[in-house]
Amino acid sequence: MTDKNKLGIQYMQEGNLEEAAKVFTEALEENPNDPIGNVNFGNLLAAVGETDKALAFFKRAIEIDEQLATAYYGVGTIYFEMEEFTNSTHYFSMAIEKGLDNSDVYFMLGLTYMQQELFKHALPYLQRAVELNVIDYEAKFQYGLCLAQLELIDECIKQFEDLVEMQVDNADVYFNLGVAYAHKENADKALEMFNKALEIQPDHLLAGNGKRLLEQE
Image (tube, rainbow, N blue to C red; front, side, top):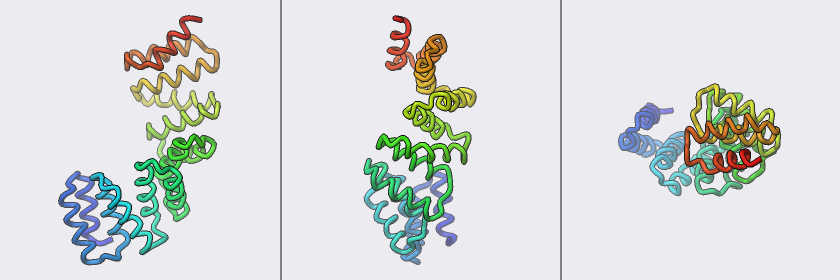
């Protein structure tokens, strides 16, 4: 990676997108066939919402170097934002096949399967994302939801209880715990969780409905 690419990434991390654009442009003018430079510019365009242009740069990077895993990941993220989940599934899978091995790519592939309600397909990828980043709240949350969809209730409860221990103060975590405990016919625990969800978010309609149903029994 050239110094200009490194500098551009630094500017992006600092939120200085104008300087990043200037430096990435210079890098590409000097070497238009640099696949990394094309990915970096694609990431910048994606960050400012220029999804069609970003897609073109990511695909250009793949044309130059079909082994570049991050380019496939970039395409996958664009298709995910466009809700073209079949395409995003393909490109995230290709990113893994080409050697990308971090929690983000497994999480995004799992999430893509979740959007298609292919829960059995989603499960191993979300599990891997959690294994690679045990403090990733969103991955653990989606993994818990996936387990619930597959009626693996004990494992589901463990994921949401982990989030409670991580002090994730989110009404949806407690609501889903309430549903899981209700599924196990533990009405007292379920009611406690629904009440906790409503403490955090008083207008949480699903938790309110769950509480009313339990209180009517």
